[in-house]
Image (cartoon, rainbow, N blue to C red; front, side, top):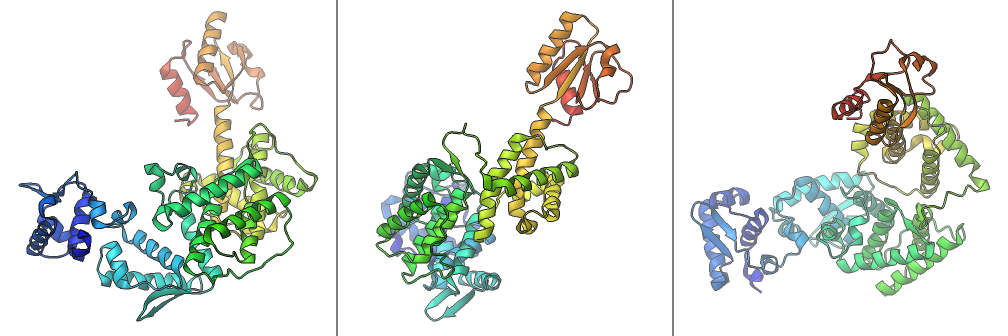
Length: 502
């Protein structure tokens, strides 16, 4: 094939033109590849000669060079969609990718030349990357081994898997949704396709589809991604090292859930058939733990959470958490049944994850901490001070962020559900028109009453959140906003601004 006769620099030129999806001058190409303008011209002549009549590179005076849009350049270069995107990626992402590659194939060696060709950079840059990767690996009791055969990672299988799970969980897209549509561009852009084959990903997806059918429910994000990546990593590790055994506790017989046990048996058998490989016994236990510690919602969303007798500790913990956070944010959640149910559904798998020492990441953690600092601080302090679940005192910020979302959602929902008294002195008809317009603008609000200014004193802040009035009132204990009797768009904006809704 033609790509076999292209030099490394010629491939870099073509890939640079491909990535920019437009024109580049010879000077721009020389800066990208860090060579002289003359060298670029010489390489372009060589490319034209090798491709002959195909004329894969076009030249336009005043603009520069570009790839012929009708040519199949990826095939010519022998690049997958992901490899084509490797050129020009930022340094942090490149180092992340190299580390994952080395972890997945450990203890198989990789040469520096091979890595340099994959990422279209110099050998010196790869050597520098490996030095930084080596320092990071030490934090996980792993080491980077260099020899005349190449470079590989050495360490326990447990530490290798643990680091891989952490790295995959920190990908920007931590949702199962794109993976559900295998043949779309969105799915193919998922980071998992950079490291795992389409065949393996399709197999795991179908496997988890069967699990959900057996369980009569859906495995919620981020638990789905956790299981998905765990099985993919297992397949890749067994593929690269058939003697791999993830040494750890094989809690033989400690399987509390028979349905989950049967699901795990099916999954392990199918992986064994797919790999034509006997799956180590302790891998059964780890897969079981992932299913057991996941949140699985029944297909019938109308089914309420069934509180069993042995849930008293969890119910007590949730009520205590609601009370503590309510005090911190000065907003009463004690009667919010929806929030209580959501927290119970979250706390159960969280408890199991802690028991199983399963790591989970929240890709929105930094955004949540930045955008909702008061709620984050309140939840963190409440967890640190409570005495009902001591293991929850030291939850990671990733785990805390998931809990914060439930409280923040409840707060925003409450902000939309105001209890309103309307004060209007323009007659019954106008009063009801005003009430109808308010209700149309704020459908979640409850109109408590429509009264005259003389009767507004009978309401207390415990009964009413806000007063909308068409006449100026004396100072009240309840916030009031002056609006027109027809409640137009300007009035709606005024109310939203007063309540910090916009």
